Length: 360
Image (cartoon, helix red, strand yellow):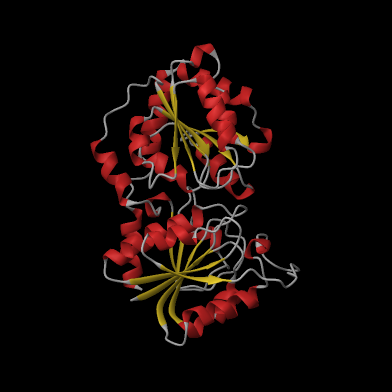
């Protein structure tokens, strides 16, 4: 099969959409399918990484037209152009040959865009988290905790195959493999993983989290801090890491499975990494960095699967420090968080999605 992915990354969008598409593309390629990507040249795009992973990328140009946002999806500005312009450019990128699947992971695109691409593809799949706009697809994936078909009532066509929940989360197979062989945690916090995604982290939640460990009570805890090449505060991070000591800074890792297996606690954002942490049974303090992350974070917290501190606008260094101290004094709570989150997801979702896709 020939499969095209339409997804973007940027300093505004983040990296999660492209990364989960890459994970799915890897499995599809292993099954003998040809996969290509179509991405727009936003600031912070990840086309070089996609090419490094061995995929062809067709780049859509930065639009100079003024974008009209009347009656558009809430995230329409993320597209960087009018949906009609994007649809036309996507058709041109695909070419005249009809492809087997077009997989769309983009909050700015709705049923109008999907319908306009119907002549270019036999099947269309949408990866979504929001259920906030009409979609036109044969296959829908919403991997979020608590998602169900009722969320999409009236938003997808009758007969659309819907896959819901973390059992379908698109995680790299390395997480399931590492999970199977990692040692059981003791409930003591000796090593903490700090990671806020592959974006610039303009609010520097990474740096704030490191500063939360300046307290003498937490000085023996080793910190593994992971940032991307686009992280905006690298010089400052190295300075505060040196001042605190007992900190390892990691750049652009291919995955976090090894570090998650070695860690006793994680501090990070909502989004795709949430499912990676749950798969590894890693107790987590979570801060939402986008409005669309809040519902899932709140639901997970209510189910006692994570510790949710709230949206980044309301989080302080003192608040992070206080939560770490609370957990460090309660090993039973740490163990309970790890056990409950690990029971939510086994890391084999990408295989399940590929199998269901072949049935369409």
